[in-house]
Length: 243
Ligand SMILES: C[S@@+](CC[C@H](N)C(=O)[O-])C[C@H]1O[C@@H](n2cnc3c(N)ncnc32)[C@H](O)[C@@H]1O
Image 1 (cartoon, rainbow, N blue to C red):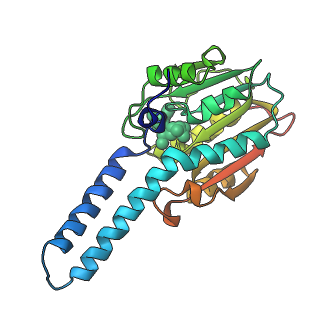
Image 2: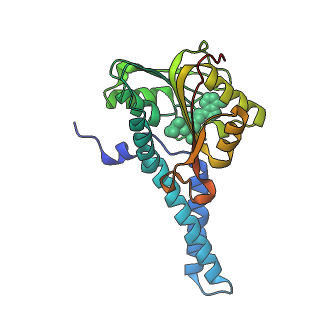
């Protein structure tokens, strides 16, 4: 059966749905007010409305299309053997987890999340597993309910750890750094970490670890504009380093 294109567009949900809704509503209110009648400052209100609507449109493009394309490129660049064990920290509805599982025909893709619907619309383990089934990778995927600051896995359990737009959601700086340490703890020596997040945050994670490279992921991963851009921290865990 052919899937409804609308369903497939929204398969992985909308990131920060409340932010998109409020930006769109405010933008539309400004545009309608400016269109209704002449008044002093009308041009400024119209420009504000157009700016807010454009910001909401860019955000939607990133969450529905842009980030998926960026992660396709990033996962391809890893040149996986296909038998690796990967952990996606804060997997949500599986945009990265399922992309990774497609490249792991003999491996395992494990996701953990707390399923916050303020961070991603329709966020549930059932939605992630349904997406995995639709992508034909259900048998390679498992999901767990867990906090990324306290991962329920032993040290050095994974060949790769990925994370996309998760850690900035953690309320305190100390807990965010704990999540970064946890991601590194469960990675085996020689394994690779790919951590995408809001750019200034990523620079702080890299400074905390004292390792890795940080690079911007470009306009396809802007949440509304360059003021909310995303960067990638990439590192290979040094051999012999524990925890
Ligand atoms: C913007 S969504 C991104 C989801 C997915 N990585 C993606 O790129 O589509 C952020 C995710 O982080 C999860 N999250 C936030 N804080 C978390 C925490 N402390 N532990 C586990 N997951 C968390 C949310 O539930 C949500 O699924």
